[in-house]
Length: 494
Image 1 (spheres, rainbow, N blue to C red):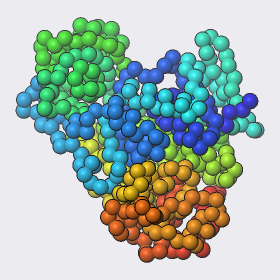
Image 2 (image 1 turned 90 degrees about the horizontal axis):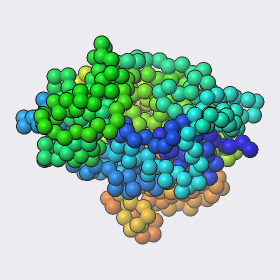
Image 3 (image 1 turned 180 degrees about the horizontal axis):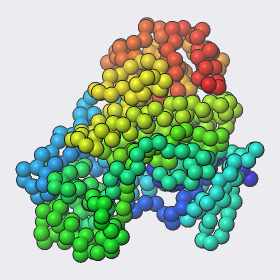
Image 4 (image 1 turned 135 degrees about the vertical axis):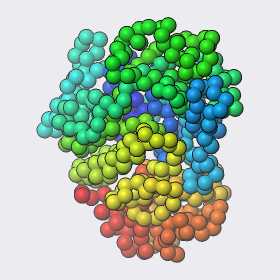
């Protein structure tokens, strides 16, 4: 039996994509080399745009439950954690900006992944751990995948294979896709530890703690007893010897914390390399890439995982359209055309941050603009109704299931026609194409600020938007007569 979609890798991107495909009734098999989920926090920042995607997926509230408080999303800069003269930045103002109903959170990967796994499996995704993919081969009709499982060889067949398998992607290698950019910008030893530092940071709780003097910094897991200490590894240092020396590791943590008698339990360690690389394409036939397999972003900006979640969101609806027969396979070529420029921009921004004092920009990816010369409109976020931009958020009242204009699209998982008020011609045109028609002000449902949607989108009175399933605007319409051709362009080949 051939699985429609086989995903390699059960990290945040693979699990997110699996759940998004199952939302659209696409059968999914996920193969993960490791015996279980990551125990290491790794990626932690989830931006507003990603939380909007998780809202559409139905897991926003569960993620907020396991995330750090919003007041902790700020930066600490000092000599040690105990430095009373340290500077602490302000928390981002996303909660008050009115630009989204889903502000970002700080949620480490080791607590995020169980939420995503549980949800993906509840939707019917099959996830197999301990399956290390060793070979991927395209055939005339699909893809053949070989995996090693406890010394045995297993074979799988799929219509499409998506590599969500990280920087050393087996799928990318099998697809013959190269990487561009820089590797080895820096090396770090990541120490996962238990130490009670509540009193040391009380009142100054932060997301990241940057320390002077080449000491690296701490990453908060719970801002109490669970921490990650990131120690920069000098070129001449034998990292394996260092990792094996528990006393030395404890010394490093105590010195960085500024607490000489601190009780430290080292749980485990890992080394990692800071890269800034981009795949030359995200697709070769039936093989596609997402997340770190497609782009490796320096963590100085917190958007590496977020760009991958955007990959999943875009890829899910396009794959579903192709597999469902409503779009040709060639429409998948647009995936690279849209997502690669976004990744390239974020890599450049993050690489620049590596040498400067940067601030959290929770709203940066709200300004993603497909097809534009500037793939991400940098600077303070400004809502827009231009094609390629994410449809602006406006608050909705009177309907407990809809609190944002974005909810009107998210609920359908299909291209959706959106207008300010009900119009019989729009309704008939949408019905003729078999797509949803969503009205902001309809019955008891209304905009909290009347006219806000028109002001943010620049629509004329009586205008409408054809919105993609990922919330981005496909086209602006002045009348219902233009819908059929706009829909054909959206779903057609490049």
